[in-house]
Length: 138
Image (cartoon, rainbow, N blue to C red; front, side, top):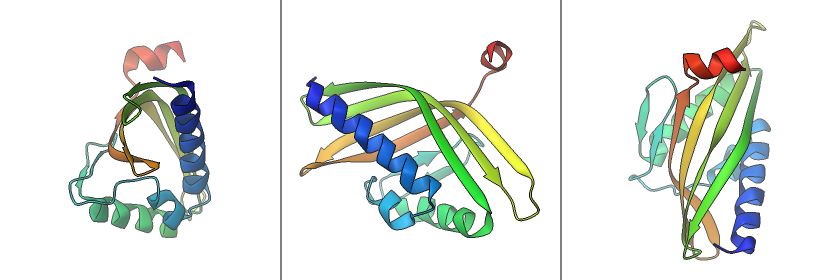
């Protein structure tokens, strides 16, 4: 695992968060493998099979919500042969709906990444809600 790969992944996730928070779907999409085999498992239990299904949900949320903010913390990376990697950390999502209500979720997240040409791409991601034990220590 090279120091360069770790820096690349740190920069990669910073860029991903920034594009999500600015609701820039085109740039956000560039961080993902946009194949029909892509899988997103979110904290509510929804499973989007294929990039198109996930993108459709994101597009609706970006259009409907007044504000979205994704935060990723305590990210730990593992890189194998500088071609495949995993990232595990904690996430927090804050959303403000058109009526001004704030909705927050947080928990753990896992990303599977693969180097495709010169770029890293997320090939699968999973978000789980914070457990009762974790919430008690927060």
